[in-house]
Amino acid sequence: MVYTITFNPAVDYVMRIGKITAGIVNRSESEEIYFGGKGINVSIVLNELGVKSTALGFVAGFTGKAIESGLSEAGIKTDFIFLKSGYSRINVKIKSTEETDINGRGPDIPEEAIDELLKKLKEIKDGDTLVLAGSVPKSLPENIYEKILEEISDRKIKIVVDAEKDLLLNALKYKPFLVKPNSRELGDMFGVSLETKEEINLYARKLKEMGAQNVLVSMAGDGALLIDENGETHICGVCRGEVKNSVGAGDSMVAGFIAGSENGDYEYALKLGTAAGGATTFSEGIGKREEILGLLKQLG
Image (cartoon, rainbow, N blue to C red):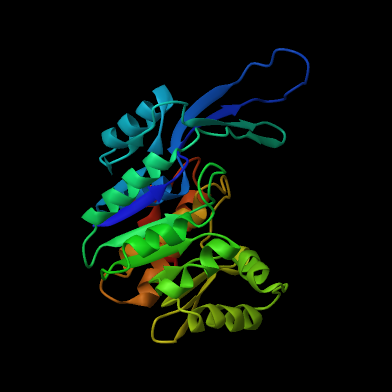
């Protein structure tokens, strides 16, 4: 079983407007609603690829209930902690001549809710996978990743970390199965600007030396680079298609890699991750199974 944690889930409300003018009433041409958050995105793509997961995290209010019911209707198992006050955030995405995002803050998460999450982690068994992704809300302790990883350190659990800078670096001592920075984030971790694949390869190997088993680096238009647990380097180019969306592409890549690595074939896992990321990039929302498999054929 794969478990994903989303600390601050959201209802993404997408509004399409031909032209927006400040100071007057603007009317949208169409609206769409998606349920999101990095861990939730991973669960959605895993579901598309036939891999079962349980979405964990914190939700609140009527928006929290909408997130839970929406995921359940899509066939995704949830085990959220419902907070006693506040509302899960609504992120408004205005797509006009320019794209503007207004992201909600989300509810405060009390200490007793954190304790409840740590108790839920006792259900995770040897051989399961836990995905930690994204930033930490201000109401949570900065070391929440480490608290979670310490809680499960006595079991043989595959840990996946997709986060920036110290969140990822501080997780390396727990020897995560996979870390997935992009090339900019990788450079930021070491205070350098990475321009070439050779430089990216060099610093990806530093993460492996520091504890990561597999290091997957997304390189935007240059594709993705993987240093696998055997020390082999794999590079995969990008898929061809019309770019429509950037939200959730990295999460989709993580899900594709997890699904593709079940038999230990890391070259295939890299290709499936690349196809999954591409499918989301070429979609209005998260990529669908048929889109992912179609793009996989491009990669050979």
